[in-house]
Image (tube, rainbow, N blue to C red):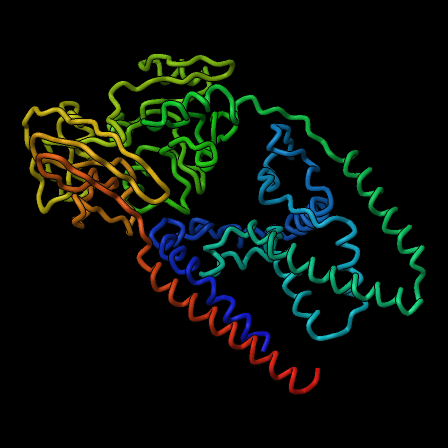
Length: 491
């Protein structure tokens, strides 16, 4: 019966899991996996057995300490975070999940003294998830498997913490039963728990070692505030290739600040964007970085007006751009040729595939502002000199809304990735979303007043919603049936 509830509980979440799976299935992580098809670590761990054993012991040791003292290396949110060189512990959010010494002690008690079947399930889940999220040698060979390969194993910390908390509850329940049976003194229990609590607090304070202020990473300061106030355009952080330490802001934190960054995190990177990113950006595993401007047209089409870089890099590689803001360790440069985030193009050409776009981008005579490229059946360049018309939009959760008037027909361009699931409505009528510059989206519009809505709706949202509703009803009916059955038996 427990497995029936587990299965139905999984189906209840279908409204989230099915659209999420569809979203990820269109990203690079789905085709390559988290290890980027690089499974050489499996061979290396076998050949270097002694080293792998040493790493195993080291990681188990630190993982257990971090479960009790999550701020062992400091806390990145207060900008004081110091971790060992080239360490897997450099991501605070994936390595520091606190259970506490008291919880861990009760969990250990349950493992050694509780002898019923259910507890073995939770012991297995706890042990297996710990081995995976701790990225232990030999065990992490499992990460090469097809399904596991799509998961960031560090995120399994939550499963380990949950299963350990269940074990802790069993251990606590066992301990209370001993007190009730007077086989253990309640006074001793209180003294022990108090001693453990204050001991943990003392050790937590002494082991907390924040000592490294990262001068190139910033949070909510004047630079972030400037970018948020100028959010009509995008920005990009420029740094040393493959080194986060020289990048003013890492790619997957931009959304937390509410600012627009073009560098991608590959869980959300669509294949159309990869056609450009692999040529015009540098890569560090699952991030795309920028250490020099390889092709300015790439920045222009994505409305990148601001470049944020460490001062020495600004002077060495980006001297052509004027300085907009000058801070202590880095500068914000401005790219005056960037296209707007949204505009109507009256002069547009057609391309067949991404190779046509790259060829035109490399042509010094190609003016991106006068030749907006829309996907078509053949390459066709129009040479009319009609400027684009910038238009504003309102954004609300999953919807972009435009209201404007134009004197001739054209293509409304929104420089946002054209992910499956986006729909366009022109004056209330659904129209086809067209690909512009291969990776961004647009829709044809007519002369006069226009009310345009771009709306994102996951393709399988309705299916997930129906499955969740039906599953919820079944769970409720099954639960009521069990209650009636229990009442009849007088339990």
